[in-house]
Image (cartoon, rainbow, N blue to C red; front, top):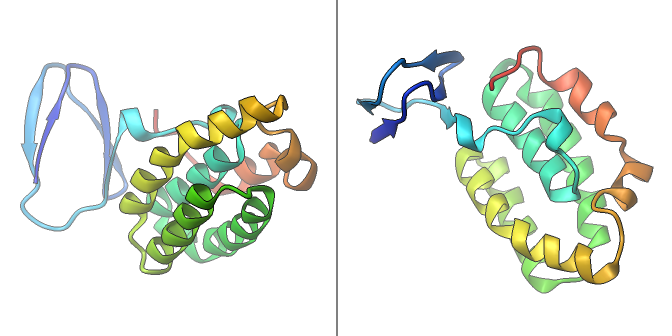
Length: 154
């Protein structure tokens, strides 16, 4: 797999955070767990139910030692989130994401979850509610973020 990074862009590869001072192309010659800086979200960016799920999946990818505990948290959050939506696209997407996470295909799950953001935004906008108001009552963002990551990626 070939990756192109801009100057000063960070990438997470197998537990290490790498930063290059100039534009660079990388070729990964074997299976590696990686996440581009542009795909990493911080705890304060988990402002919607789907972004909170994303953060949890991201944590499984970044913190494989804690993935069992994080996966349990993800399953609870997924059930809560699925109950919040009636939209068939979102529900089908969540079902597919659950399958990907079950198969430890976290990178693909993140990719599919990002594709649901526009639908979620439209739903939240049409309901006239603040982005995370429903989920915050059930699972506060700080309760999700605090125990998951022991290090910042970005």
